[in-house]
Length: 443
Length: 146
Image 1 (tube, chains in turn orange, cyan):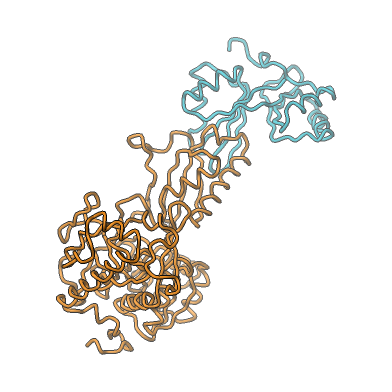
Image 2 (tube, each protein chain N blue to C red):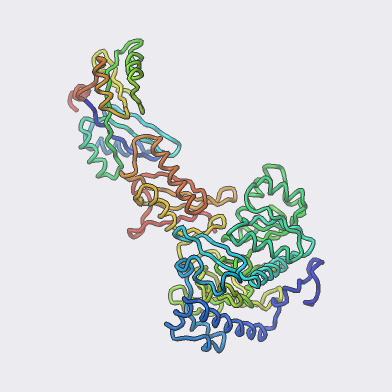
């Protein structure tokens, strides 16, 4: 079965073989890889070596997969504090690619790949696309942003490795996206689900009904979305909408994906070992119970990441998948254990907005971030309470202030935010602390 | 003489204006004149009251953001060409006007306009040099009993 090529719909790509490994074989593979990666991290990355010694554990103590809990966690701050290259296990000449994601203090988090790491990345993206029913002959419009963000290139190389035709259109320019989709006979699109809804809406305005196009699948990720959005998209566009999951710290897109049965996301756990822990205690929760997803890269050579706290809340699905894959599955991620939010594919912490506000007038007024979804597109509005320090008597001065705040936020986040000046004491405070993020997107 | 004007930040929403007016009403403070500059999102309410500092304290205590700005109240002959004559002086001396609005009450046969100059001291000096009268005290605008 696994030898079948993928020229025909429903066929298997050889790269998908590990999706169907018998469990004893899968667990054995994972243990061997875990021991190797723990040893690599211990020996080649100062931070991991130090942490393991402090916890009194060595890679030799990993005798079974359950022993993974003896290894210390890695936090996002660890990646930030070692900026730029502190967690690399490979010397620079072996590293062939760098990516970076947004950070909390203006400094991004940098991630690295060896040539073999890129092959692994391509292979998990091939498995992602194959799981979503794509194959050679598909024309894939890749509207994830190309650049430092992992989404664009991750999907690109995966789609090429699959044998599909890739259109590297990147994000933005909605009308051109629609023109290309129609004129090139696109059969699948990769982008954020909210952007796709925006495309549908714009298509309607242009008199283009997506249901009449060859488009049949959407590979949607990089932001949380809901079953309701899926139903809307599938109905309005006449396609199958698949949820994919990934994060730059681990590899980028390709960590987990829905399959043709759309009953949860399979984690490509031969490369990314999943645990679900209680966010407060860090202790594993029973299978099926909600908790924080913790991931360990089992094969990433340039930059191993051990027990990474994703802050994404999900649960293992305990019933067998309808698609026959043996990989563990999780529910779609819709919320987090910290105050980070994701907007238009960009990770944002409220503290970044604080930095932007502080840099404008040197004072930090009370503020609130309001997230809304207008015409399918996420909007961010920052409400700023006017204080005597920032209040000026002329409209032009206040509009100038709004513009400066807006520019400062755009510089910090790379996102355009609407700034609204509000009267003092109008932002709701709970227990003396303002509620920083008001998410009205109904995720 | 410069006159102290209060500027308040207001959001552009129903009943926003009523908040400061009610506070002043409860404190028994009469508004001599006012203007409202607005945008889609917010507005600036500018007020002339008899005792600006006291009113400021009361408004701030109630949670408002209040600035005190110095303005010049210019007496303008209430006849054709009256305002034009004053503006001719302002233009001749290159005085920069940020905004202007008028008093509702007149002073004798004259209208009174509130000017916000970017440099009020220079404006006062030059207006005086051209014989343009400015209001020096606000008592005349108070109706008896307030």
